[in-house]
Length: 275
Image (cartoon, rainbow, N blue to C red; front, side):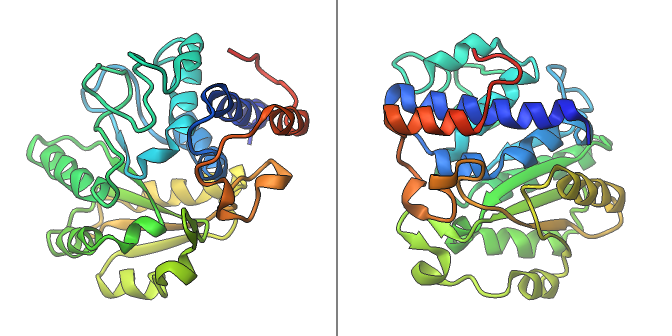
């Protein structure tokens, strides 16, 4: 992968950390864990842009990781990076969970109520088929989010109706707000479950590797439109890139204090310019 993407990964981490610190609010853990996914998706995989006609569409189901979403959109040119300073402030377009009533470029649905993104994505995918639109729908969900039953109706519906223009990636960081997913409500063997629902299942053993993410997303894109929906099981590390935030649910929704921010930014030196 390009060195510029490596730099973008680091800069995106800085954006996330600075956004949540500024308002002492937000969700840094999952955001940091999905940086490589977002950077890869928006830089070389997805056909996207402000013109929505015949473009791929991305839907963020686990909307609490909005910091990584906003940073990605800003760095991709959807709006100015200086707007990141308004994160979670009154009258800002960049609320804690993405909303589209303020016409924020790049945000296609309001999300935050977990378990709904896949259903919306399937609806969009079917609409594209009805309109002879060959572009794809990409959805990101969290592993804890799969404890919501609506997802399983969606998985069943998509395969039964051969919705083969959708690619859902499941972030398997093994953590949720109250602890590990295994302790809160074990979701079991997802690969076997999804295959039994007649989905094609791909796996990313290291979802924090740009190369691994790019390779698997490229394969999923190539395998689309072949009669089956595609799911990607992506193993990531919550809080990736900041040593004291990694491997724990405690940073799911907690902002770093001044000293912690200083240390986190020290581990991720500025690359492309802070907002």
